[in-house]
Every structure is written in structure tokens, then in C-alpha cells.
Length: 263
Ligand SMILES: [Zn+2]
Image (cartoon, rainbow, N blue to C red; front, side, top):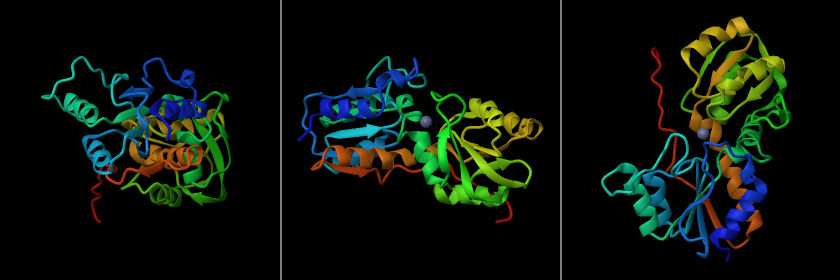
């Protein structure tokens, strides 16, 4: 069976380490590189529930999208049982688990977050949005549909609990996608002549100003727009290492819910 190191190398062939942002932390972050792996759990994040699931499923490795520690938003100064982060890291290490995280190096890579998102939405002719090295993707719908109908399509295709959207109801055909917090790419979507931009973590002011800029926006949530990559990742590992048992986390779900008045 492959070692953690061999699996990390295979993942870096899919998404080279150099593709990661400066503030990121990718690759094997926890565990023994020489440990043999028979079972892998794939999840968008390594939460306490995901670690418990990996232990219950007798996995030796968790492969996640978001880093479990020491990227921009998750600095680790101490590893102590009495902090949530320390509790999680100690649980993983004491269980003999390893963790590999493939984050911004995978966002724009072939088979990465945005390719998976474009595929999940059924976009045709998907290609890079703006410069070829860019993170985001764009593509077209087989047939145009009004914005509200497209919002429903996005919600269902991504199994989101709801989506927030703004813009006139006119037909949508050319679609830009940026899984996760890609609001900064709004101008690229406008420059490329897209009818709508699907991303997450948008602010009130971005929604407010969108109409004046000539773009419609759909915020489908961070988890729903990025989670499709886990399926692609699991399939890649199964293809690369026959005999390895690779499962997608069943415990990790969208935590954000929507209450809509009138329903
Ligand atoms: Zn993300």
C-alpha cells in the first residue's frame, strides 16, 4: 500500500505546490510520511467531526481542501488540549492519523475547485476567467435562463440550503465561477462579458454595486461552491492507487441555514 509521502507526491503532481498562495500551507501537515495508508477520508475541512469519522472508519489519512493549521486564518502558536484547535490536532496525532491539505494550489488547477464547480453547474466549454493562470473559470449554459431560474439551478446542483443573489431577471448564459471567497474576481467576470458570477462570501456593498457595474451575482456559500472538489479528489486517488479505500466525508456538511420569511 502507498505511504503518506507517496500520496502527497501524487497530489502535488495534480496540483503543484508552487501554485499555492504565499499565506497558505499545503501538503502533508500532520503525521508520519512513511506511514502506510489503506483508507483515506476526503473532506473540505478537518473538523472535530471529520477526525472522529476518520478514526471510526479506521483511516490512516485525511485529505482536505482547507489547511488544518497555519494558513492565513488559522495560526497555531500552541498545541494544547484545552483549546479547540489543540484538542483537534492532538486527537489526530494521538490516533496515528496523517493530514494532507491541498488548498490554493488546487483552486485553479485542472480538476481543481473551479473546474469541479463549473462541471457541477453543467457549464459548457469551461475555460479560465481572464488570464490563464487565474483561479476562476467561465463557461456557458446549454440554453439561457432567467436569473431566478438559474439561482434555483445553482442551489439544487450544489445541494446548498439557499443562495443569495442580486441583479435583473434577464437571461443568463455566460457564467463565471469562483468557488470560495472569490469576490475579488468580479471585475474579471465583468471584463469577460459574463452575465452572472457565482461565488461566495460576498458583502452587502458588492451586491449593492453590482447592477451599476453590469453584473449579476450569486453567493451560493463557501461550502457548497467548494465541496464538489472533494468528489474529484476522491476519484483521482482511487484511479491513482487501486486498492486504496477512499471515501468522502459523510459527517461534513454546510452549517449555514436560511430562514426565509413567508415560507
Ligand atoms: Zn475555501
